[in-house]
Amino acid sequence: GAVVSQHPSWVICKSGTSVKIECRSLDFQATTMFWYRQFPKQSLMLMATSNEGSKATYEQGVEKDKFLINHASLTLSTLTVTSAHPEDSSFYICSAFPATDTQYFGPGTRLTVL
Amino acid sequence: QKEVEQNSGPLSVPEGAIASLNCTYSDRGSQSFFWYRQYSGKSPELIMFIYSNGDKEDGRFTAQLNKASQYVSLLIRDSQPSDSATYLCAVRDDQGGKLIFGQGTELSVKP
Image (cartoon, rainbow over all chains, first blue to last red; front, side, top):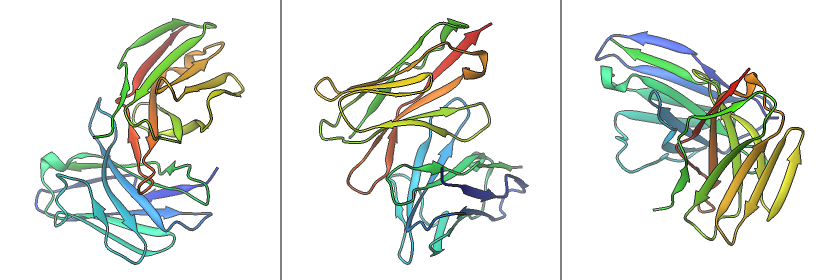
C-alpha cells in the first residue's frame, strides 16, 4: 500500500506556543490530504481537507485561525496548532490517497500541551 | 447529516472463533466502504474496502455489503489474540472524498 509519514511522532509544548506537524506522501502524489484529531476512547474526527495550491476546507466547529493548514506541494501538508492550550492535547492523524480512493493514514502525532 | 453507526462493544470472542462486526450507514447513495483496524495508540490501518453488494474475501477477513439494507459487516475467521483492536467502519463521502467514520467496535480475542 501507499506510505504516508508524519513528523514529529510526538511533541510536548508549553501552553501558548505553536506546533507544526508535517504530513508527507512518500511514494505517491496527493492533491488532497485530510487531517483528523482523535481523543482517547473516541473515534476519528475530521478537522479539515487540505488541497494542494488552495485553501483548506474546515469542518464545522474547527477554528481555521487556530489550526493553520498549508498544502504547498503534492507530497506535503502541514498543520500548525497556534497558541496551543491543554485542551488541544490530542492524537493528530493525517491521511492521503493515491489514484484510487482508498485513504492511507500516517502514523499520527501525539501532542501534549502543558 | 450523514452517519455511520457501529456497536462500540467490547466484543469478546475466544481464540479460533469467528468475530462478526457490523456497521450501518445513513446515506443510501454511498458507494465506497472501508474497514480499518486501529491498535491502541496507533493510527488506523486499512483492512479491506468493498464497493459492490455481496461478499469480498481476503485471507481470514470477509467484508459483506448489502446496499438495500444499508449494512456492511466484517467477519474475521479463526480469530487470534493479535486481532484484538478497535475496528472502524468508514463510508466515503462522494462529494469531496472524505471518510465518515463510525465510532468503532472494540474487539477482544481471548486465548
